Image 1 (cartoon, rainbow, N blue to C red):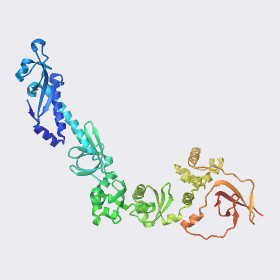
Image 2 (image 1 turned 180 degrees about the vertical axis):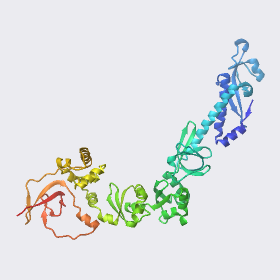
Image 3 (image 1 turned 90 degrees about the vertical axis):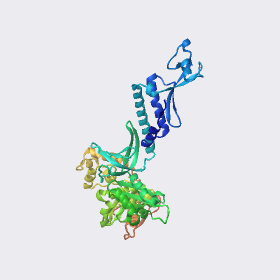
Image 4 (image 1 turned 135 degrees about the vertical axis):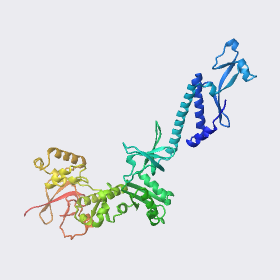
Length: 513
């Protein structure tokens, strides 16, 4: 008996988006499962579909002479019974005998078939949905709020074919939802679970903002304008660096849109989150200036290019704007440009001790280092205890060299510092500072008409007076007497701590006549 499955197949294809070949395979597995439960084996069972989607199941049996050899009812059929089905049947031939499921299958066999069908359909649907949504990772999708799990705040979103989840950590702190509210989100993960396929959504990912701009700005969608980098503090502020592949197209203007229409649409989707769109520049100075928007930056000074350390100078009125609430603006700017930015006002910059920064600039320019590499102050040691730093400063000890010159007794007598803290400080110095032994030249050499003598030291120092003058303003220069370097004979003056030619450390001793 053939069963017409056309309507069932069409309904499954429409409701569950399942391909026809998988549905036919499920029907076949269902009938075979019922057949096996009824007869104990499926090796001789054959399921057939015709062009009209009618399905039938047959048992393939061998024709035997039952009077002579006997008959195995599962695998064989007597010649007389076979000729009733086919008058041309002969002993030794094989014949297909159609099975009527309505008559041959008992209740338990039918139940087994149903369970097999349900399980097969679930697996097929799970695989189909996984394949479909796996290819959509990184895309935006629209769903509707269904319910929220009270225990962890996870929101379940109806995506049509299935249900997605929006975990609490991926929700913006600005947002709240009610039943049937529309939710646009980014697909971040697609996982297979025992209960089906799980789609994880996010509204805090930077790619969510990228997707919104791609939808609203045609120039970004067609790659005329490209996004260099996005950094974000969800619910508070987003910074977006863009550049144009065509000179006549303004990348920032394209993102903002006529009368700010494009960016306002994105801001509305983000529930009022502030967005700074700025122009990317390969020059780090200009890029840092742009990144600190909306603040106006007077100047940017590169302190250490290798370590990406910079100083931004702003007016008093722009300081709070540059730093932002709880340091948010400068923190996002740091992440956007990948530099460590320190913001100072003009007055703070004029008062700050720039000797360390100047020495670093000289080292970067001439490839030199002092006895302590790029670290000369105790406060510059990574991970140093700030309480120890304050205690040493109160005692007049700021530089590492001053600390090392203290005797053991002086160290023990330092107030507010215990032995463990001193040992920790020594270990930090040993780990991060390269010390160079100093050797005293044998004998003293006298130079010039005066009674000045000079002792050469093997430690390498730095002279940054000229660089400081060039960067921070000029000063009156007094004429000084010139001498000769004891090592190479080059001209030196009393204000030098190193020979400008060979770099040897210099110190001058004056003797009373």
